[in-house]
Image 1: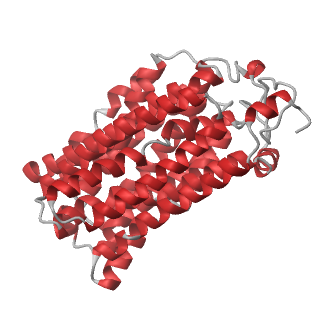
Image 2: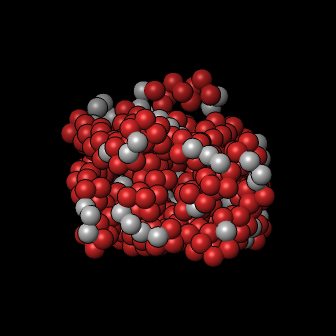
Length: 417
């Protein structure tokens, strides 16, 4: 039940996150915004989201996780619906920022909560299922946003996509929380540096200074987060600007641009997440997880370049599918790497800091950077070239981890390594 409910919330999370991208040109016209301004609501959402994440990480252990998650889902759903009532840039910006507070509660606590339901060797599969909701939700956000926006107006797109989250928020309160760190006794890694040693106990979380010290010495965690940041930069810019790119530069209607982006996201993302997760399950260990993630980003870089240069609609759609397919490979393996690399004592805090990092250097800045380059160059295509560049950077960082980190099997068998 927990996996089902939390996955459903993840679906709504990404629907609500990407509705604005599908109706960007509609609210741009009504609210009299520039390209740069149309991306600032997404940036404000991400900034608030990443800053609020450590707050909820600190609350873990003081307030039941399911209560924090339910409150967060209810808040972001109300804020999404209320965005349809915005009368200007300022009100729209504030309401999208509030969405970030709600989503921070959910995104910070859910991976740690799921990790306490399952032992380490099953987490990749569970987190793969959990993350399969991301491309589906993003696709529905693009598709439903474009559909409702074209027929009813952009305001109704926010009303109809945001408010259903209130129902799912109530379901979270029905969950029974597992004991924090219940599988720590089966885990051969110490709580910080990814090195072999005695199993850890499910004690209360350490303070933030101790958490930061442990994570600063954990190369596996740092490399996973650094690559994740570069890939998030690319995926954030792609999600926010690709429907507009199709609409402006490739002759698609607004509805068709949202539908195609959504269709390629859901099909490519679902298959990519599923295949990446299945391969990760076959590999079972975290060093191959980094290899799989790195190689998939190389392929995603090539396919994204082809999608930006293609002019024939059929070729463009095929390249978009392949780009999304490889782009989503990393979800299960990298998230499993992150939660397995640290102790259950401070897993929520480690996840919250990873959220802070990937968004601070990723999708908090990439959409407005693309918009600013478009404004300066008078050509959206020029800004979009930043996407394959950042994908290549992510591939390189994960490749460094793949080639230089010691094998976890060696660490487990040799405490002296």
